[in-house]
Image (cartoon, rainbow over all chains, first blue to last red):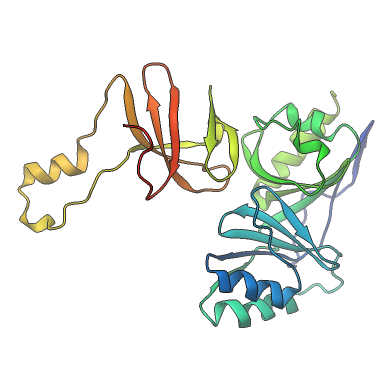
Amino acid sequence: MLNYSNVIENDKSYPGLQMREIKPVMKLIIRGKKRQFLSAVGKSLNLLLPNEANTSSRSDQLTALWLSPDEWMIFSNEILKSDDNNYDVEKLLNKNICKTNLGAVTDVTDQFVLINLKGDKIFDLFETGSPFNFNDFKSKKGLVTQTILTKIDIIVHNQDINNVNLFVRRSFSDHLFSWMNDSASRL
Amino acid sequence: MFLINCPFCGEREQSEFKAGGEAHIVRPKQPTELSDDQWAEYLFMRKNIKGIQFERWNHIHGCRKWFNMVRDTSNDEIKAVYKMGEKPPVK
Protein backbone atom coordinates (compact mmCIF):
# COMPACT_ATOMS: atom_id res chain seq x y z
CA MET A 1 0.00 0.00 0.00
CA LEU A 2 1.21 3.48 -0.75
CA ASN A 3 1.98 5.91 2.03
CA TYR A 4 -1.06 8.13 2.52
CA SER A 5 -1.83 10.67 5.17
CA ASN A 6 -4.87 8.78 6.27
CA VAL A 7 -8.19 10.42 6.95
CA ILE A 8 -9.35 7.70 9.33
CA GLU A 9 -6.85 7.93 12.13
CA ASN A 10 -8.59 6.61 15.20
CA ASP A 11 -10.79 3.66 15.96
CA LYS A 12 -14.23 4.80 17.03
CA SER A 13 -16.47 3.16 19.57
CA TYR A 14 -20.14 3.73 20.42
CA PRO A 15 -22.62 1.63 22.41
CA GLY A 16 -23.15 -1.46 20.21
CA LEU A 17 -20.84 -0.30 17.44
CA GLN A 18 -17.08 -0.22 16.84
CA MET A 19 -15.54 1.14 13.64
CA ARG A 20 -11.95 0.96 12.44
CA GLU A 21 -10.02 0.97 9.23
CA ILE A 22 -8.15 -2.22 8.36
CA LYS A 23 -4.90 -1.66 6.48
CA PRO A 24 -2.84 -2.55 4.59
CA VAL A 25 -5.01 -5.13 2.85
CA MET A 26 -4.55 -6.21 -0.76
CA LYS A 27 -7.62 -5.61 -2.92
CA LEU A 28 -7.99 -6.73 -6.53
CA ILE A 29 -10.83 -6.46 -9.01
CA ILE A 30 -10.93 -9.29 -11.53
CA ARG A 31 -13.17 -9.41 -14.58
CA GLY A 32 -13.90 -12.19 -17.03
CA LYS A 33 -16.75 -14.12 -18.60
CA LYS A 34 -15.41 -17.37 -19.99
CA ARG A 35 -15.64 -20.68 -18.22
CA GLN A 36 -11.86 -21.09 -18.59
CA PHE A 37 -11.48 -17.81 -16.70
CA LEU A 38 -13.35 -19.18 -13.68
CA SER A 39 -11.34 -22.41 -13.65
CA ALA A 40 -8.03 -20.55 -14.15
CA VAL A 41 -8.77 -18.28 -11.18
CA GLY A 42 -9.90 -21.26 -9.11
CA LYS A 43 -6.68 -23.16 -9.83
CA SER A 44 -4.43 -20.13 -9.33
CA LEU A 45 -5.86 -19.07 -5.99
CA ASN A 46 -7.25 -22.35 -4.72
CA LEU A 47 -10.51 -20.45 -4.30
CA LEU A 48 -13.76 -20.87 -6.24
CA LEU A 49 -15.29 -17.56 -7.32
CA PRO A 50 -18.90 -17.23 -6.14
CA ASN A 51 -21.32 -17.74 -9.04
CA GLU A 52 -24.46 -16.82 -7.21
CA ALA A 53 -25.41 -13.13 -7.01
CA ASN A 54 -24.66 -11.23 -3.79
CA THR A 55 -22.52 -13.96 -2.24
CA SER A 56 -18.86 -14.49 -1.33
CA SER A 57 -16.36 -17.31 -0.94
CA ARG A 58 -13.40 -17.59 1.36
CA SER A 59 -10.14 -19.50 1.64
CA ASP A 60 -7.46 -19.30 4.34
CA GLN A 61 -5.78 -16.27 2.81
CA LEU A 62 -8.33 -14.68 0.48
CA THR A 63 -11.98 -13.68 0.22
CA ALA A 64 -13.79 -13.24 -3.11
CA LEU A 65 -16.87 -11.01 -3.32
CA TRP A 66 -19.43 -11.19 -6.15
CA LEU A 67 -19.88 -7.70 -7.62
CA SER A 68 -21.57 -8.43 -10.93
CA PRO A 69 -21.92 -11.45 -13.27
CA ASP A 70 -18.41 -10.85 -14.65
CA GLU A 71 -16.73 -8.93 -11.85
CA TRP A 72 -15.33 -9.97 -8.46
CA MET A 73 -13.29 -8.33 -5.73
CA ILE A 74 -10.57 -10.33 -4.04
CA PHE A 75 -9.02 -9.17 -0.79
CA SER A 76 -6.55 -10.63 1.65
CA ASN A 77 -7.90 -11.84 5.00
CA GLU A 78 -4.71 -11.00 6.82
CA ILE A 79 -3.14 -7.58 7.25
CA LEU A 80 -0.04 -7.43 5.07
CA LYS A 81 3.28 -6.70 6.66
CA SER A 82 5.11 -5.04 3.81
CA ASP A 83 4.46 -1.48 2.72
CA ASP A 84 4.85 -2.05 -1.00
CA ASN A 85 2.45 -2.54 -3.86
CA ASN A 86 3.71 -5.87 -5.17
CA TYR A 87 1.55 -8.87 -4.43
CA ASP A 88 2.25 -12.48 -5.33
CA VAL A 89 -1.47 -13.09 -5.93
CA GLU A 90 -1.62 -10.26 -8.45
CA LYS A 91 1.47 -11.50 -10.26
CA LEU A 92 0.05 -15.00 -10.42
CA LEU A 93 -3.28 -13.77 -11.77
CA ASN A 94 -1.56 -11.51 -14.27
CA LYS A 95 0.34 -14.50 -15.55
CA ASN A 96 -2.63 -16.90 -15.67
CA ILE A 97 -5.48 -14.50 -16.59
CA CYS A 98 -4.18 -11.39 -18.35
CA LYS A 99 -1.42 -12.93 -20.40
CA THR A 100 -3.73 -15.69 -21.61
CA ASN A 101 -6.46 -13.16 -22.56
CA LEU A 102 -9.04 -14.72 -20.27
CA GLY A 103 -9.84 -11.60 -18.27
CA ALA A 104 -8.54 -8.51 -16.51
CA VAL A 105 -6.90 -7.91 -13.13
CA THR A 106 -6.80 -4.47 -11.53
CA ASP A 107 -5.07 -3.56 -8.28
CA VAL A 108 -7.49 -1.42 -6.26
CA THR A 109 -5.64 -1.62 -2.94
CA ASP A 110 -5.21 2.13 -2.75
CA GLN A 111 -8.51 2.97 -4.40
CA PHE A 112 -10.72 1.38 -1.76
CA VAL A 113 -10.70 1.88 1.99
CA LEU A 114 -11.78 -1.08 4.11
CA ILE A 115 -13.73 -0.13 7.23
CA ASN A 116 -14.61 -2.91 9.64
CA LEU A 117 -17.72 -2.54 11.79
CA LYS A 118 -18.56 -4.66 14.80
CA GLY A 119 -21.54 -4.71 17.12
CA ASP A 120 -25.28 -5.18 17.10
CA LYS A 121 -26.07 -1.64 15.92
CA ILE A 122 -24.36 -1.89 12.48
CA PHE A 123 -27.54 -2.23 10.48
CA ASP A 124 -29.34 0.38 12.57
CA LEU A 125 -26.62 2.74 11.35
CA PHE A 126 -26.94 1.62 7.71
CA GLU A 127 -30.71 1.96 7.80
CA THR A 128 -30.42 5.66 8.57
CA GLY A 129 -28.84 6.35 5.18
CA SER A 130 -29.29 3.47 2.74
CA PRO A 131 -32.25 2.43 0.55
CA PHE A 132 -31.22 -1.25 0.74
CA ASN A 133 -33.41 -3.71 2.67
CA PHE A 134 -31.01 -5.26 5.20
CA ASN A 135 -33.63 -7.47 6.94
CA ASP A 136 -32.61 -10.75 5.26
CA PHE A 137 -29.05 -9.63 4.66
CA LYS A 138 -28.05 -9.21 8.30
CA SER A 139 -28.80 -12.76 9.38
CA LYS A 140 -26.95 -14.53 6.55
CA LYS A 141 -23.19 -14.85 6.84
CA GLY A 142 -21.17 -14.20 3.68
CA LEU A 143 -23.68 -12.06 1.79
CA VAL A 144 -22.42 -9.12 -0.25
CA THR A 145 -24.20 -6.10 -1.65
CA GLN A 146 -23.30 -2.96 -3.52
CA THR A 147 -25.55 -0.11 -2.58
CA ILE A 148 -25.51 3.52 -1.51
CA LEU A 149 -25.04 4.94 1.96
CA THR A 150 -25.69 8.65 2.34
CA LYS A 151 -25.45 8.87 -1.49
CA ILE A 152 -21.98 7.26 -1.54
CA ASP A 153 -21.35 3.98 -3.38
CA ILE A 154 -20.32 1.25 -0.97
CA ILE A 155 -19.70 -2.50 -0.97
CA VAL A 156 -20.95 -4.27 2.16
CA HIS A 157 -19.71 -7.73 3.09
CA ASN A 158 -21.48 -9.52 5.93
CA GLN A 159 -18.37 -11.32 7.15
CA ASP A 160 -19.92 -12.73 10.28
CA ILE A 161 -22.86 -12.01 12.51
CA ASN A 162 -22.34 -8.48 13.85
CA ASN A 163 -19.08 -8.17 11.90
CA VAL A 164 -19.29 -6.31 8.60
CA ASN A 165 -16.68 -5.13 6.10
CA LEU A 166 -17.45 -1.93 4.23
CA PHE A 167 -15.49 -0.84 1.15
CA VAL A 168 -15.65 2.76 0.03
CA ARG A 169 -13.65 4.77 -2.50
CA ARG A 170 -10.79 6.63 -0.84
CA SER A 171 -11.95 10.09 -1.94
CA PHE A 172 -15.33 9.51 -0.25
CA SER A 173 -13.95 7.84 2.88
CA ASP A 174 -13.41 11.03 4.89
CA HIS A 175 -16.96 12.25 4.38
CA LEU A 176 -18.50 8.81 4.88
CA PHE A 177 -16.56 8.13 8.07
CA SER A 178 -17.47 11.47 9.60
CA TRP A 179 -21.11 10.92 8.60
CA MET A 180 -21.04 7.44 10.18
CA ASN A 181 -19.59 8.87 13.39
CA ASP A 182 -22.20 11.60 13.49
CA SER A 183 -25.00 9.14 12.79
CA ALA A 184 -23.68 6.53 15.26
CA SER A 185 -23.60 9.12 18.05
CA ARG A 186 -27.40 9.56 17.68
CA LEU A 187 -28.45 5.87 17.51
CA MET B 1 -40.03 5.92 -5.41
CA PHE B 2 -40.47 2.35 -6.59
CA LEU B 3 -38.63 -0.97 -6.49
CA ILE B 4 -36.90 -2.37 -9.56
CA ASN B 5 -36.03 -6.04 -9.92
CA CYS B 6 -32.49 -6.00 -11.33
CA PRO B 7 -32.07 -9.19 -13.43
CA PHE B 8 -28.66 -9.72 -11.80
CA CYS B 9 -28.91 -8.46 -8.19
CA GLY B 10 -32.59 -8.80 -7.32
CA GLU B 11 -35.02 -6.22 -5.99
CA ARG B 12 -33.51 -2.82 -5.30
CA GLU B 13 -34.70 0.71 -4.75
CA GLN B 14 -35.09 3.05 -7.72
CA SER B 15 -32.42 5.49 -6.49
CA GLU B 16 -29.74 2.85 -7.24
CA PHE B 17 -30.67 2.96 -10.95
CA LYS B 18 -30.29 5.32 -13.87
CA ALA B 19 -32.71 5.50 -16.78
CA GLY B 20 -31.06 5.14 -20.18
CA GLY B 21 -33.82 6.13 -22.60
CA GLU B 22 -35.81 4.18 -25.14
CA ALA B 23 -34.78 0.60 -25.90
CA HIS B 24 -34.59 -1.41 -29.13
CA ILE B 25 -33.49 1.44 -31.40
CA VAL B 26 -31.57 -0.14 -34.27
CA ARG B 27 -28.65 1.74 -35.80
CA PRO B 28 -29.06 2.04 -39.60
CA LYS B 29 -26.77 -0.35 -41.46
CA GLN B 30 -25.65 2.24 -44.00
CA PRO B 31 -25.62 5.65 -42.28
CA THR B 32 -23.98 7.34 -45.28
CA GLU B 33 -26.98 6.55 -47.48
CA LEU B 34 -29.44 8.31 -45.17
CA SER B 35 -30.73 11.84 -45.64
CA ASP B 36 -30.16 14.36 -42.85
CA ASP B 37 -33.79 14.04 -41.81
CA GLN B 38 -33.59 10.25 -41.58
CA TRP B 39 -30.37 10.47 -39.57
CA ALA B 40 -31.87 13.06 -37.21
CA GLU B 41 -34.91 10.80 -36.83
CA TYR B 42 -32.66 7.93 -35.73
CA LEU B 43 -30.43 10.09 -33.55
CA PHE B 44 -32.80 12.39 -31.70
CA MET B 45 -36.43 11.40 -32.03
CA ARG B 46 -37.76 9.34 -29.12
CA LYS B 47 -41.22 8.17 -28.12
CA ASN B 48 -42.75 9.88 -25.13
CA ILE B 49 -46.00 8.07 -24.76
CA LYS B 50 -48.41 7.72 -21.89
CA GLY B 51 -48.63 3.98 -21.44
CA ILE B 52 -46.37 0.98 -22.09
CA GLN B 53 -42.84 2.01 -22.95
CA PHE B 54 -39.69 -0.10 -23.58
CA GLU B 55 -36.69 1.40 -21.81
CA ARG B 56 -33.04 0.78 -21.03
CA TRP B 57 -31.93 1.06 -17.41
CA ASN B 58 -28.56 0.78 -15.70
CA HIS B 59 -28.02 -0.48 -12.14
CA ILE B 60 -25.42 2.20 -11.71
CA HIS B 61 -24.95 2.01 -7.92
CA GLY B 62 -24.99 -1.81 -7.93
CA CYS B 63 -23.71 -4.25 -10.52
CA ARG B 64 -23.39 -1.50 -13.19
CA LYS B 65 -25.11 -3.70 -15.79
CA TRP B 66 -27.54 -2.47 -18.43
CA PHE B 67 -30.91 -4.17 -18.86
CA ASN B 68 -34.30 -3.54 -20.44
CA MET B 69 -37.57 -2.74 -18.76
CA VAL B 70 -41.19 -2.53 -19.87
CA ARG B 71 -42.83 0.23 -17.86
CA ASP B 72 -46.24 1.85 -17.89
CA THR B 73 -45.33 5.53 -17.79
CA SER B 74 -48.77 6.55 -16.53
CA ASN B 75 -48.48 4.72 -13.19
CA ASP B 76 -44.84 3.48 -13.05
CA GLU B 77 -45.98 -0.12 -13.03
CA ILE B 78 -43.14 -2.36 -14.20
CA LYS B 79 -44.50 -5.04 -16.54
CA ALA B 80 -41.25 -6.90 -17.18
CA VAL B 81 -37.49 -6.75 -16.76
CA TYR B 82 -35.17 -8.62 -19.12
CA LYS B 83 -31.50 -8.75 -20.03
CA MET B 84 -29.85 -6.99 -22.96
CA GLY B 85 -30.15 -9.00 -26.16
CA GLU B 86 -33.27 -10.83 -25.02
CA LYS B 87 -36.64 -10.35 -26.65
CA PRO B 88 -39.29 -8.46 -24.67
CA PRO B 89 -41.52 -10.95 -22.80
CA VAL B 90 -44.60 -8.74 -23.33
CA LYS B 91 -45.81 -6.77 -26.34
